[in-house]
Length: 245
Image (cartoon, rainbow, N blue to C red; front, side, top):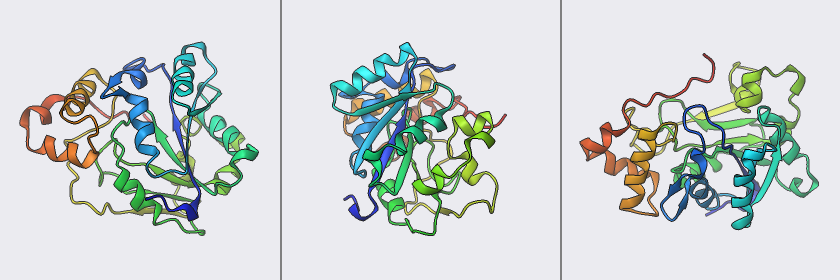
């Protein structure tokens, strides 16, 4: 259940262009597509869900899909994702939100339970909240950001990576901001399991999981994969891209 006290808006960043798997966010998945699955889960723990994409013509498909399901879609710079978030958050209609969650559209199995648990850790003295690296399965977590802190970032000082990965500036340099990294309340982390979408093998695995259950949760997916050696190996060669090479 959403804790209304925190007025949390979720911003999902999406784009058609992808070096490894172009168009992946609109690939069919379950009874919708990848982006639709992300939106559906974000709605369960958010007061409002927004999709932000680029003004490039190829992202018209994303805007059209959002319109078809009555989701607000904001369009801005293709490469400067930070500016997209900022342009959303300074709008008067979003004044009521003190916190936002950052979600990427290639994670159709974000965990509602992990998100709800993270929301309970919100505190006025914090700038950023997330789960500790390598303690939750790839593709299942979200990040929560203090809106005021985010808007006070000097965009002129951000490098290209920080403009693309909009929370990098908050947690990369220790001591600059008050960040809280928490442990998962579940004992289901397995470094072999990835539930994000970057490669065809990732998509094959996700399609198998959604065929088993069109409303599958990340927790159920992890449980199924752990018991099935074939599924475990399906995307074992998929490597997670590093933020900084």
